[in-house]
Image 1: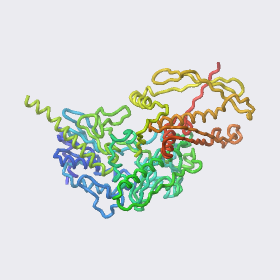
Image 2: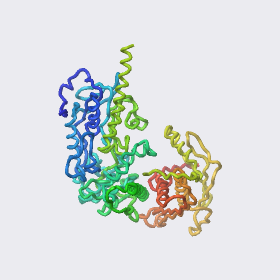
Image 3: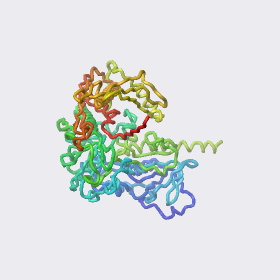
Image 4: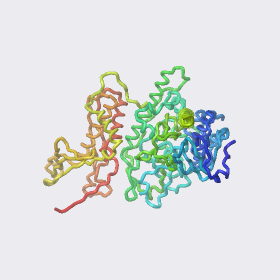
Length: 435
Length: 192
């Protein structure tokens, strides 16, 4: 197996090693691309900053499980073989699943080899690492979409003495002091953390902005089953009205638990969690919450019902579909009579957990492909620089692009583009030779 | 799944130039400096609680702009406050602004979704405990303790589509944002 192909010699090279493609990141996307390139007979290496599936192994909270059931977990040439197809893998099990996959690939995989810089050079790119450099004709960036926590600027206004943790650093409730906890953000991360912190005996207030509400199970099947069957997960980015918006939709309020329980705001309230609006400001040690809570909940309820309508329509149009439970609509989100607009930090709230999102880290990319706001310019993963590719971002090419089972289609299509790029850049040198 | 309804009949006409709005969105995405606006009003005290405010000029798209004409608004307090009631109470202007903003948004969103509106009527009510402004109880805030907005809408759309219009309008409303979120206010003074 190739996983420990890294050797001390890499750091001693005086000249960069040459290869056709450098794949950055040995998570499921990088490895799926390695599989694709292997099938195409394209020479490449995979560089991994730490270990295979590192974020799953070391950078998430203890209780995290995949949001998709096991039967959906699939990579090119690799699928779930366990005996619990309807279960949800823990983060460690995901890491094991990805490590098993890595062992089956043939390309050289260099772990503990963080890329420090990618810069254009003659005929392609120079990829620098502390263990040596590679010169290559194409680079695939599969280093993840969720590398760094996104914190709002108002985090700076949290009074000293109030403990702050991002979802990136949070592991378990016991890291937090006793007493009230403000969880900021109500996407999958926020609602999961709010629930387990509340259950630890620390009263939780959750600040809720725009969010996506979904039932775990609908009409007897996992909601992901319906979304896959109805074609929603395969929907292409070019077919949505507003691509920018579609790519920034927060992850849905889901959790993968053995009970397959729905984890929406009503479920949190029933366990005693208090809902407040989006954290709008902090003034004189007091957190101020937006008065928009009712509307963000109404938006999420309406959107969930449109999705359920679409599922019902699909079922009606596919009478061959197996027995299903009757149509069901869920109670609207109950925000209470008068949600609080302020809370004193320090007194009522002893700690703040920021579940305000993650972003990719491309700080090592020294290629002029960033827009004014610092986002990478690309067309469905084909970056605005020849031979540079991107994988694994939310809705990169399809709604499923950031899911494990979404890698397969994306690496096939991007792999095809990459192969034709390598073919095309070969052409000129041949012309020169014959001229 | 979130696609607006597509209708084959006559396109909706709510009197909103959606093409211009979408064009502006595209243009201002490319040149964000043009998106920087300054809204202005002037006001002059007349007597008692009676003031007259004027809106005329504003700044946007990189240059000074002007309304088609100057508009004036009288503000005063009602007679039960021992005032002559020469105009709306200032807090009522907040409701006027919120209604105007949300309703404009509903029309624009409906146009964009090709939904024909027939009537859109809003009723607004804001609670206020006067013990705040009168300094009777420090625990009572000066402003509203809540605002209730109710819409009665007749349109060629399902109740869910109408609810979605109103929700989307709130999501994109400037005045809704102003009243639901804190805003930093700077007041300066000069003796003349």
